[in-house]
Length: 239
Image 1: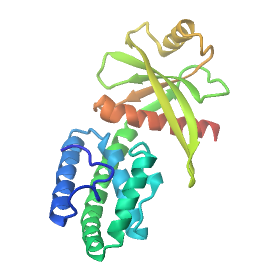
Image 2: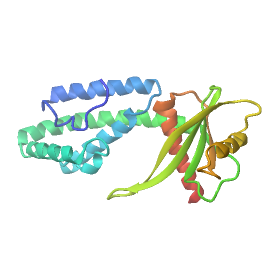
Image 3: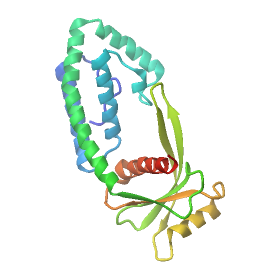
Image 4: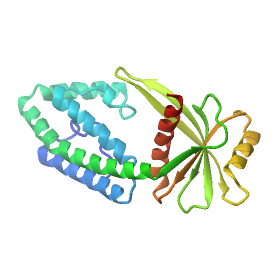
């Protein structure tokens, strides 16, 4: 089993034993991934499901903001109608509450395991500017050095700001550019100069070196954590 559907709680058979099986199978899949230090997509998925269950416990209502990119507004409205019917049925609501009480502490424990792995990997990532930084560092390049890998991966990044009704967020969009072999004559400053010559859309780009001091899966852990670490690093520069 992989990820749970956004509407797993109300979809299909509303039966505690069945939903218990779904939750345990999902958490076992997450554990297998976490044991291999593969955080994503399970870590973000766990947070999403836990927050939604928390909202249901507190208000007995589904909140559309809890479904970013997981479900369309039209699908959510159908789900909300279905859920409202369940809320109005005392017997069904007791079943829901039992399922929520079973799932929440288990999701929370697995989230805690994921958080420990995240923080450990994050603590092993080092970020440094390459050369002089321009006034605006919200767009540029970062050079990713994986532990014991002979190539440096180059990504273009752009930090964006978006907000919902509750708060403002900073996100980051990245695009892979190329990889270059590490070598004595291949300094980070030389790579930066080469990038400005090849790609003139950024004549004076902010450029950062991101170094991992441990080996971990690139797409499932290192790259997502490196992206978030870079957002924090750049935000602190401009704070």
